[in-house]
Image (cartoon, rainbow, N blue to C red):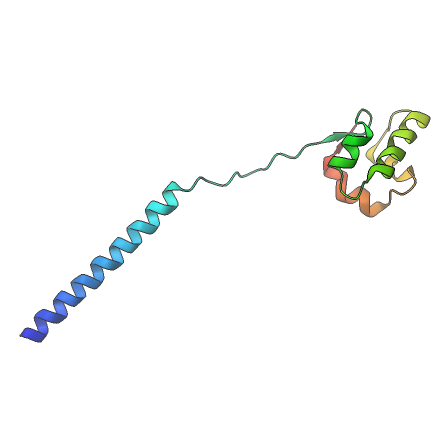
Length: 105
């Protein structure tokens, strides 16, 4: 009988610890803020951004390429499409694809 009481007591204690641990996990997850579903991405206007902005916001575009983009725009007028960026010396298809979602006219 002593053994049976001890086993029942031990079982009850283990259940209580398990329930308390589960409740603590639920409380922790309730306190954590939900991650944003969508992260806003800044867009860069090819026809109005200055060289500093182009170099800062675009992947693979340093100061020299940013200046080349602005020079091309000044010499040829506003970009008619994002794909026209390929006409700028030093801008290839890979660089364009890395930045396509950030670009607008």
